[in-house]
Image (cartoon, rainbow, N blue to C red; front, top):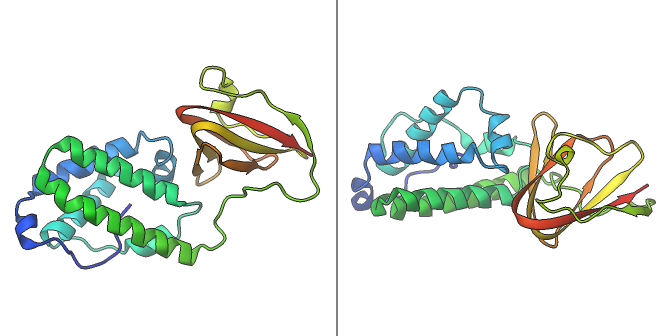
Length: 229
């Protein structure tokens, strides 16, 4: 995710301690991690056609933001506002991976400079997204007029059927209410572009009939599906 097009805010003294090589290494290391993440990877892979070019754009962005180097010419705010199905969990996960990466790179000046920038940009992008997508929320409660008729077994990473890990759907006329009892689960709608949501313990999500989807555990846990018709 890019930052909103705002003026660089790093102090000259701090920025001077960060090199172009540091920023280039950060971008490539961080986005290699993003591309392996079950929550973020579907989102990025469905919108990035040329990763080499995209990474160079991201490098240019961070060089502009931190070192005030010319070369970045983009409008990330409206691009993010047009993405379908974003939630704060996506930005939160992006920040978690970003902070983990800056910590592992062991360049204190880099971490001290860019971590705060990343937090500000995630907050600003999310606020802007909510403003432009008021109806983008996932369905959390079962529609009226449906009745529960069957409860699935409790699924864990140990007994999760292989079919659940690949695109599948519920039959016509049947709805599912997925409840996460413990751990964390990524639910992916296998549409174009894919939509993902992170579900933590205690959360639930309505699964509509005949909509292809799959699930991925990101932490040890358990979930169950209450089928309605």
